[in-house]
Image 1 (cartoon, helix red, strand yellow):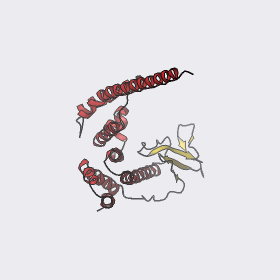
Image 2 (tube, helix red, strand yellow):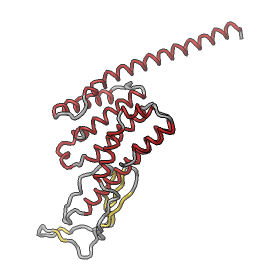
Image 3 (tube, rainbow, N blue to C red):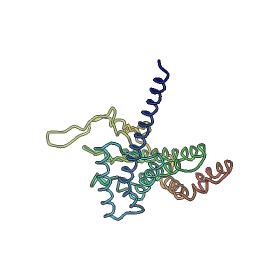
Length: 280
């Protein structure tokens, strides 16, 4: 093949590649700009919102969801995505009602306290990923936060199991309102049923079994309560103390704290991280 022809084809290939890369880069930057414009109003909301502000925020989130579902090309650079996540989770921590706004009256039956801590942990994880820290240090902080999340889940599920066990034994009894951490259940295994009599009453058969209630948390851990052998359930840890510990970590891991950690030497950094997660 003629050397000039080979050179021409090679040059043409490089040109096409450069044009393609330029087009891809231009499109990506345009998508970034479009997404920034879409999400920018979210940053106007912070702290504890008034009912009117909560309503406007929910309407804003709904309009964003419609646009992102119907249209493609909404994306942000990784750091900006983490910044948005940290801001949003902090907002939900301060206003847990926002998470349940679309559920209507059911909100009155939901314990939002574990959700407050859950959103706080998610906000801290996003901030940790943003922090100017060695990868090992970020991994250590996130590991501590994940451990808090698992303890929070177990605590919430154990409370739910207590509520199930303490339900009045009567026909057509509804299960307790779902709690944070419960992925599936309650499901009953091996239980008998009330008998509906001709006069409209219900009777419980002699020797009948209520069965076992099974629950699975969002980590896949299974729990069971034998309703025919009721025992006093013992909590793994005190709920109020756990909440206080998570709140303390949230209050300590501020932006200023991350900035302070970023200038420490590696040895001092490890010590300070452990102090942050040690109860005083």
